[in-house]
Image 1 (cartoon, one colour):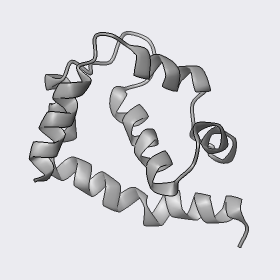
Image 2 (image 1 turned 135 degrees about the vertical axis):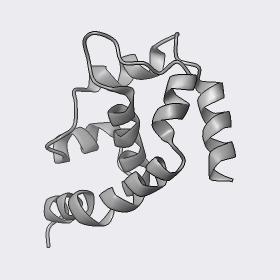
Image 3 (image 1 turned 30 degrees about the horizontal axis):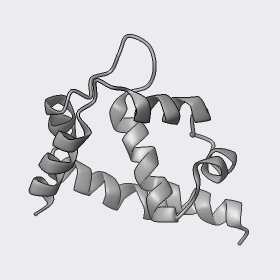
Length: 102
């Protein structure tokens, strides 16, 4: 099984459900709203971008290799703009998500 096939298989079956279940259990959408992660009129929902970051972390992939090997990845500018957005309260997101996990 090649690396591409393994990554696609992992994203579609092995990794997708446990990560989504944990995020749903801690009510991540509520935490995102409380931390001012609200979707603008244009662009992608913050939940989906954070989910991609979690996939990159779990698969130990850099952003560039994740973009090349994933069919559902966004352009690199989407991730950079998401990180640099000043209206997002990152500290509150980390605090609330850690409290929910504990």
